[in-house]
Structure formats: C-alpha cells, structure tokens
Length: 401
Image 1: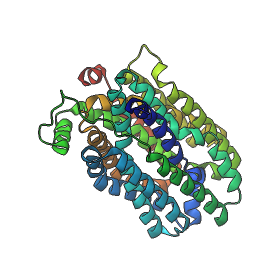
Image 2 (image 1 turned 60 degrees about the vertical axis):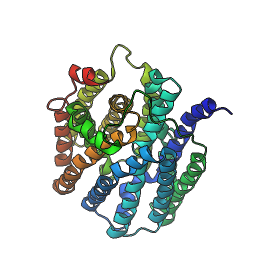
Image 3 (image 1 turned 135 degrees about the vertical axis):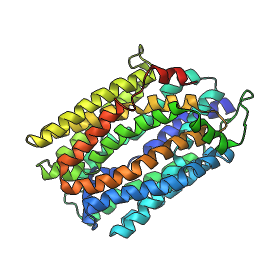
Image 4 (image 1 turned 30 degrees about the vertical axis):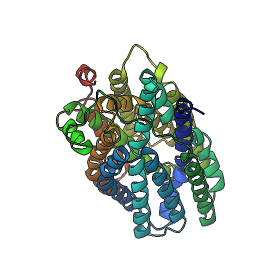
C-alpha cells in the first residue's frame, strides 16, 4: 500500500477510534451512577471543575508535543490513559476517588484534543483535498454519535436496577472499546505538518501565543463556541436526575438520548451539504439564535409546570443544535491556524474554553443548590451572550485566512 492510500486510511481509522473512545455507555446515567457512589449534585459539578483545572495545566503542553513530536504518538497515549480511566472508575467510590479518575481522564482528553483534528486537517492538506475539510470534520464529529444511537438503550436496559454489578458491566464495555481503539491507532500514518510557504518565526508555542494576541477574531470564535456548549453541558450534567425526579423512566430517558444522537449523527455527516448558500459563520450564528430560543422555552417549561415530556423534547433540540455547530467551528479555527502549530493552536482555543469553564462551573455548583430554575436561567443567559456580546459577524469570515 503506497503512502497516499495509507493517508486516506487515516480518515477511517480516526473515525473508528472516535467511535470506540466516545462510546461512554454509562453517560446516560452517569449522574445517577456518581450519586450511587457517594457524590451529591454540587460535588458532581466540582469534578467537572477538577477536569477543567487539569486540562488548563495539560492542554497546550500536550499538543505542543503533538506538533514537535508525533500526533500519532499522542493519540496512542491518550487512548491508553482513557482505558485506564474507565478501569479506575470501576473501583471509584467517594469524592476523592472520582477526582483522581477525572484528573486522569482530563489528561487523556488534553492529549487527544487538537491532535486528532490536526491529523485530519493535515492529512487533507497533504492529499490536496482541503476543500473537503468540512466533509471530513463533519464525519469526525459524527463518529461519537454512531454507538450513541443505540448505546443509551443498552445502558438503561442493563442498568435498569442501578445496581453496582450493572454499573461495572457498563464501565467494562468502555474498557474493552478503548483497548480496541488502542490497537487501531498503531495503523495511523503521520501526515506532513509543514509546507514550504510556512515559516516558524519564534517557535511553535510562541507563534501560537502571538496568533491569539493578534487575533481577537480567534478569541471571539472560541468564546462563542464555549458559551452555548457550557449552557448545554450545565443542563446535561444533571439531566438524568432531573428527568427521573419529574417522572420520566430510564427507558424513556434512553429513547430521548438515542433520538437526538441519531439526528446529530446524520446532521454531522451532512455538514458539507447543509445550507450551501451560508458559510460557517452564518451557519453558527443562525444555530445560536435557534438554540437560545429553545433554552428560553426550556426555562419557561420549568417555571410553569415542569412537564417532563416537553423537557425531553426541548433537551433533544438543545443538544442537537449545539452539536451541529462543531464542524463549522473546527473549520474556522483550522483555517486560522498554520500547519506547523495547528495542534497547539486548536489546543490553545480549547485551553481558553477550559479557563472560561472553570469559574462558570463553580457558579453552577452553587446555583444548583437553589433549584433547577436558577440553573436553567443561567444557561439561558449564556445563550443570550452568544447572540449579543460575542456574536459572530461578517467580520469573522473576512478575518479568517
């Protein structure tokens, strides 16, 4: 097999690595699992803070290694740590144990973050297929949804009694899936990171810092992406406990998650053909407005009746709309970056996301103690900020290279 054929195989390998490492079959009942293992809702948000703190320390250094050493190597180490996280979760009881496990998972995430997208984009560049980057990135974002189209139903059927043995079985599925992904990573081919017309001025890391300092556009793109992500994350983190407390069964919860994952898989796979008359920034702007409207309806539903059927439908819409934005943000950021420091630039954007997340997650951990309506109102405020103060405009597209 020649190099071109091996490079094309990268797309399939990354797709299946994403599928396997993102199964996370216990996620549908993760809040209930953590409560059963001794955590309360505020502590669950604090574990998310720990994740962000570790990510802040490891995000850019890890992707600096990807640019200077090997993207394939970082992906391999990330998968190995992911397998260890799922294995450690089997034995995790109490707040301290979960903080340790989440810290390991955050390092795994940081090693993969930026590295996988850079490998995909630079593979496209070496093959001379940059015009297909949205298509490839759409498949990349669709991959995690493949198993999740039926995984939640499997999860709620296996863990219908929320017993410890059932939790262990779910966690074991992810351990095995990550080990298979580890095997597949050995077949990845490292694409070329540089081109002759790209010149490193100060070094990979310093050039990345200069790019952010001189590009308010890139910072605004990152903040815009983060606000609605955090709004949906704040709700998702407690959604299983919230919906079951309002009368939803685990089976209906699984059906709701399966529905939005299936729609999101299809939508991401079709990213390259959606609304061809609009470019990336226009797509994002319209999706932000629609998502903010749905957040408002979700908040209103909680205040005036808390109907769990309406809540499930609105939650699905929030997660679908927020998830559709992924490939378009990725395309904007990849076009802003250089090849030689692409992984570091993407991680720099992700680092800014984690810095923003840290204080907001701390606020969420306090707000949830006052009631769900306060948390949902806070999520709505983030949506409003995404379409007002930090909105994307025509200037965004003009500033992207």
